[in-house]
Length: 200
Ligand code: SF4
Image (tube, rainbow, N blue to C red; front, side, top):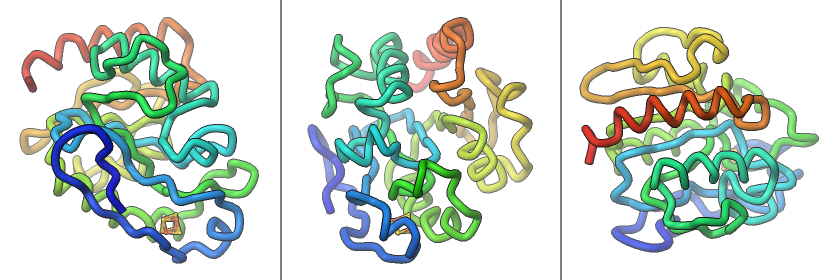
């Protein structure tokens, strides 16, 4: 399946993956990563939302957390849109999830489900080679830190908008936009504005 939608070379992920029976039974669709294949910034959420990506096919769109995240991307000029409700935004970054199928009742994915789906994230990381990785929410941070930083993530309330480095990759966790205050999102935007000029 081609997930790059507006520029550059395609990234392929499975079109009919059935590794997680409970998610396969619940999902409307598999929600692949979305954005520019030339992205220097990769944002990774937990899972497509029932009222968001599971409906639209695009991570972080339509539902409240999606609109708030799109507002952040617009503020950082990582989106060409001016309306955060656009459901196929023209992005200069790439957004994806730890698991690509909506869990029943929007529950947190199980460890097994995350382990089933993480190889697709590692593939995206390998293909994109982003300079900045943004785990969005505590579940994403806990899944990503051991691989990229070799240690567990601090609680997301502490890690939010902090800058972590390893091997040329910068990791800047963000508290989930559904639970972030406006002040917390503003702080994340301020930190990213300092970092982005260095990564082109
Ligand atoms: S969550 Fe990932 S691994 Fe599980 S069924 Fe969906 S695409 Fe496959």
